[in-house]
Image (cartoon, rainbow, N blue to C red; front, side, top):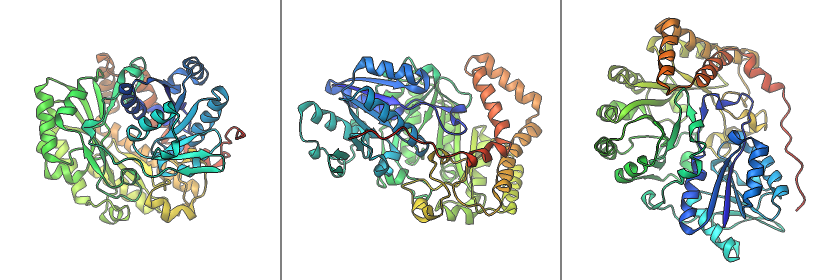
Length: 482
């Protein structure tokens, strides 16, 4: 069968793709599972092609099945609008929506334009679904679906048990080869996403990853990791594992095998500070595989703050890990959660910590109850809006202790503080000189640098965030008749 996967267009209030614009790895992986079964797959990225040109390409392809990925709550309206347009464009096509957000709250996607919502890993759900469609079988016997029927949507039962990751076919990266030069994070371009593990054994209350994967944690073998890395042309690789190096022995063996294979990339990984504190030799081993940068979800500068989000870590570990990374000369990006219940003293405490630790590259997320998380269950009665575009973790959707104007004054002040600290620490001239040197290598594009610097300035102004609270909730296109 012909199967098209379509990535919705850019949207949202601030357009966070300014610094993060990455490939649709989910559809790439699902297509990789379908192609070996003889299906003809196509991936269309409307963020790059544009909506009209992309939809016209889809019409010419004439898919029998269309897959839409809704990973983030902010994509809900765009996904629904797209499904309705596709229903009008391709009335005979079977339209299925998958992704983390759709799996978290499938009922929200119960719309006449959508034939099914896939729950769980797409590689487990989509091949049986497409096979059943091709054979004309009863879809009610295909597990892992919210299936549209005349009387409403029915759940067909849990998806099949999750397989060993090594048994899943390679991602179909050739389907996005023409898009590959466009993908980046920060100033790193071109960039590929790479998954070496799925799931997380921890249960942070603001996160849905562990719920999506039902508290499972699965890893690809070092041999599979090397084999897959050999298929990636991009010099920059972002490893999507929620916690890298969970398995220390595997982390060591991956580094050994990557080095032995002669693979060198600029790797960006995400991990916990307690892992860095216990096993700093992992950092040194991975430095031998190319360049290394680490994203650190520090969340809070106090043990009390960490306990509130069920982080199962300590503030002491956070500080020690930063010192280790500085000593090893490894770049890192700390991120903190800003609670709408904060007073001015809480903002001041975070600014003082950042100054003391010299973490001028810090980022800040507003505590946001996302559907499907424990935090949502405890806080949903207090949410102030169902404008899903505002669930972008840089706007508050909960009541604030300070006035809204004061809250955003303090929040934007954090972004302004780190920008000023960067200039005070490195100097404006040196900062721009380093950016110029990076541009000279050709690995960083001027457009990306310009967007990044502009974003830093935009985030330093409170009105940047306040304006969203005056906007009406987007109205999707009218619901089509069943």
